Image (cartoon, rainbow, N blue to C red; front, side, top):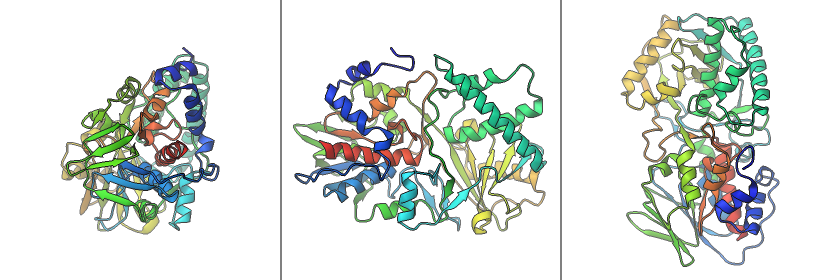
Length: 466
């Protein structure tokens, strides 16, 4: 057993792979081999293959686009009546709103940046420091204290990162941070500021930092800006999916392979092919409502069980007018209740629409799953009324509920404390003629659109290399 998990030979044995197959898969899985522009050209196909893809999200579309462009026949089975999976763009409030994945994180050298540019989609750089911050009483912070807060937090995170590097055993992100804080260093106010900033981090994790691995919890990041797509991320997927055979309303119940044939069974039909690519979210796999024949290997089933599924929800609110400042990209709220709607995306800054998009995780993100929309809107209005005395109730609102969505069962994956990232490799490994893709199957950029995109490319390349 290595310090950070099983040694490579043990991993190969647990996965049941031949040495040549292990080397090939690990080579194809390297990040450099997956970034567009560095992919090796596929060999000319000897014959046309038929591939069935389960799921029309980013991973499924990326895989299908690659395979179809190489000359193969592909059919995509999507349970929903729309494209995108956990990408959900809604325009019912008179503004373009991405209620799931919708931004490009760390855009430099990010393959999705190239795709967006190819399809001539508008982007706006996001500035994480372009925000106004209000405390639990509705008082506004001045800019100088905010700059000091950012500098202090940056130093604290650097110290925590160095501390993590020196540890042999895994620990939670919370433990790492607390370990570098000196006794009595934080005043009550500084502690509130730290907890608010942590709550922003938790929006991107889908859970509390107490639960996430400090050694492996963050995906590798590219540099560069974060980009917002004002026309919606669905426009990018629509361009990528042009000409693909996508069949909506097709909920897959059984996935099997036998005698050189792979198939996905719905209530209507048995869709057969040479291979099946499964892009189902980790939360759906955990439900175990889809049956596999033969059953998943122990290694894969164990990975499904041990990897974590986080939950972050968004609430869109439209008003008759924008009663808040338009010069900032974000409005942030530092409640005395940690995690209570800490972040509001200000659409009025970008397109003059009187719309705010609130993000929430932790117990508040879970609470909106069971609350009627009106109760969620009232709760947020109470916050806004503290800050702006003339804040009216919104005239329309929309709440995402990714946890109760039967085709998502959560927002994105994370690595719990003590969980080795090799579990993502187990989840990704093909079994017979069944291949797997999705953000949970990649070590780098897991939980992000980029990870889903790269996983789709990888599954397609693995099939074409057979």
